[in-house]
Length: 238
Image (tube, rainbow, N blue to C red):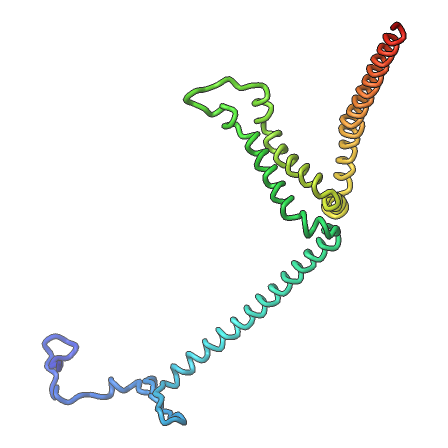
């Protein structure tokens, strides 16, 4: 549409049909030009040099950042792979030293240990002792109260699982304990655990068990002796 008026209302612009190109092209230097390039196969490419330069600039920056990130990722991946391989070698050389246990018993015993752990969870679950039965509430037994307290719920599954593993894989379990004491836990903590084990298990439970077995054995010997003596006396009287 041709503007017959100037910037001021009521002012008629003379010679309106003549198009003034000064304002339109006064910044012609900023108007991009199109460059035509010929490819070897005969195709032509139309491109704007300013746009191509702009895109190439940010493309190079992106490629540089991508290359740095990829190098960091590759280096970290190789480092993690080396750490994993070192840990696997450490476990094979220090824990899985018995070929028979490793090849034949490790997988089934691990499954049995998991079953023992789940059994402990079932035993220590309060809902299995009627504590959450709202329809028919029942009185808790002493065994149920002892089996569902926090300490037992925390330790019994681990004890059952560890006991199963230690009895069926004695060599591997012994190596796990020694490696844990030597490399995993601090020495004062390990010594404290040994003292507690010595006091409660070696000098307590184990000693009482040994004394009980010896007393039962001696009682059986005395009983057998009295029976034999009674039989012999009865035979002599005949």
